[in-house]
Structures are given as structure tokens and as C-alpha cells.
Amino acid sequence: MIEREATVKIGSELLVHLLGEGARKGVNGRLVRIADDGYYEVMLTMQNGSYTALLPIAGTAIIAMQPESAVPAIEVER
Image (cartoon, rainbow, N blue to C red; front, side):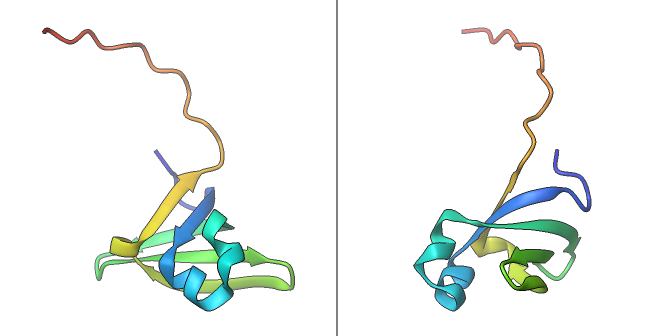
């Protein structure tokens, strides 16, 4: 689970549109909050500083930078 203020990789078509093709691989940032209005509030880390952005949940992928701790396998009946 991604915790609040966790360092994340953010992928968004909106960022690609605004920042160019270099943003297609994702941008580093911090998840500040998930708003009930349907957007992520993130702090983007870029070459010349940090910027707050509100990105729509529907068009944004957020990936944790740190792997999850190992979880035991669950047996599935087939």
C-alpha cells in the first residue's frame, strides 16, 4: 500500500502532454493526498524544483518506489 507522502513514480497522459515525451517513462514525486473529488494531489520533483499538481485519478498511474514486503502465497482452489 502506498502511504501518504511516500516517494512514487507518476505516469500521466496529462504530464506527457505538458512536459513532453520524456514524461512518458514517469516522473518522480510524492503522493500528498487522494481527494474525494477524483484527483491525486502530488508534489512533482523536477530538475529545477518541486511543483504541486492535481492529476485526475482516471488518467494517472502511481507506482511505489519501494517494493512491498513479502506476503505469503494464498492457496486457490481450482
